[in-house]
Image (tube, rainbow, N blue to C red):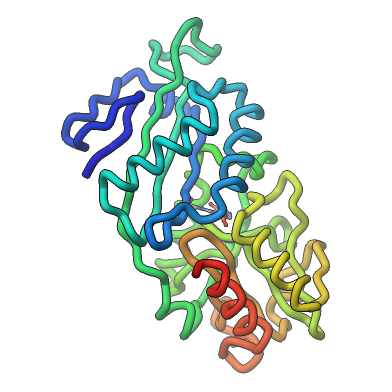
Length: 276
Ligand code: PDD
């Protein structure tokens, strides 16, 4: 496949990454995962807004304008003939001998590539089983950084326990999942953690909240507890790769009837309509 690496379109085999890249030493970088439907980037503007916010937060100067990045990603999609999948885009602070201070004069390193990925229709239909795991991350989870060790540990812990994904909580308050946001429905109202520093401000989360408001479904952006989740009428996760996927079991307990509920189904339909 064709990669975009430091401003060049080259074959994956020809990408040469420095052992001094600060992405390896420090996880010192940021990324985005864009969804591609029918050869087009979904919600590009929202992803780029978050990219800029993270780059500012990490004090990494993006080496291209957003317009240039968007054009290059579109060219990458075209060169790879991608119709349905994702584009991964990453910037690290650059390559320099290992030392904590920001390196002088090192240029950020850019990489982007495409992956074919069908829509997760089976999981969206049947729902997933989740496992609650303590959220041991830092306090800037709103930055989309390369430091994903707590996320991968949580995901693996969930898989080892026989589940599909991890639901993270801080002292009993649900934040989000290993690579998605989570919402519950109680008494007809959608609850989801506010978009503060403790969660990633998911692009899909934003779309789904907009769709809920358009459908006149009450929404409260407020933290909820693991107990409220276990007693919820419905629960679902949102994300670029999972779209709107029901959570039907948590820690072995069925959520409501152990089936996707009506609000979830309605939002799945509304979401599907946005990608056509
Ligand atoms: N993850 N929360 C976390 C921790 C995430 O990593 C993601 C996305 C989301 C959902 O955000 P969005 O709707 O913008 O995709 C929430 C990507 C897909 C990943 O790391 O692979």
